[in-house]
Length: 176
Image (cartoon, rainbow, N blue to C red; front, side):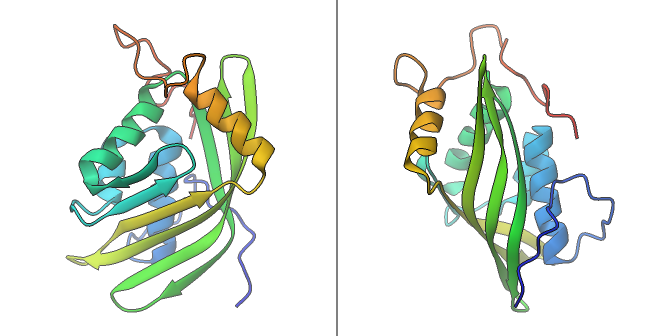
């Protein structure tokens, strides 16, 4: 199986909503546009789902996962990623995609390139593909350190929405 090099960005016009490819397009559309409602439609609404990433650690269940996306979408950072160099492995009831994400993480004057190994698992639930697992890893130790420090901020904590809601905001600079 040859990996697909054409990136999935979320901007793709092809949409029938039934294929694994379209499920991935929908995820990247939700992520890159900062759309938490669409993201909740992408993920299965279950306590059995899980996400593991370089900053947030392991999160289980939609409430914990939703909190991570809300922090990203409403926080001070602008993040953009696209999925490429991927393969899709499908059965009638599930599929997983294995590939790479590239993009940028910008917070203040800091602009950090992202290079993440990524896997996503989806199950067919009531006729729709719903994500049940995500894992992302950053190979480069220097890049991982820069990313973790930028996300953590000066006090070593992940930034949260400022008082009065003046963060990057839904879709801020996330033009899709």
